[in-house]
Image (cartoon, rainbow, N blue to C red; front, top):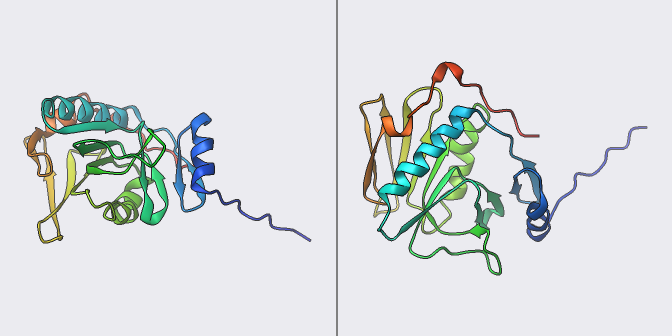
Length: 200
């Protein structure tokens, strides 16, 4: 007779302890730990371009940019994740007693993959919306020059915009800046792009 082993569930503190020495980054999903797989060179290029250009544009302003080495904790849904790019306004707010887990981004940018597209567009966006400070979400396609944008309005509704083609310019509402598509997609060669692997 086959005996099915029980799936192990972890507390947030167990996850955090494991993550301190983990060889690869992992997401925490309300008790489950899921490994984040590596992505293509062009996925990394887009993150680099966003971090470099947007970071330079924010210089001297009350904002700070972080990329996917810093974990975001979402208390309401007990989620720990690593957005590709985050921007905070003012001082960072961390999980109590930690300096590696942030709570207060105003802007989050995710570069899509074949695996993450539906997750980022639906589940993660719902989780992110529970963050009080969160006001803007960008989804960047690595398969064509195409960006989706969601902006929180003063009436707590979400406005949707899309940008397409290399002549487009994105207006970041949360930080009052603009960035061209050519800056975002610098050195990206679509023919070389390979989809990310599905996480284990």
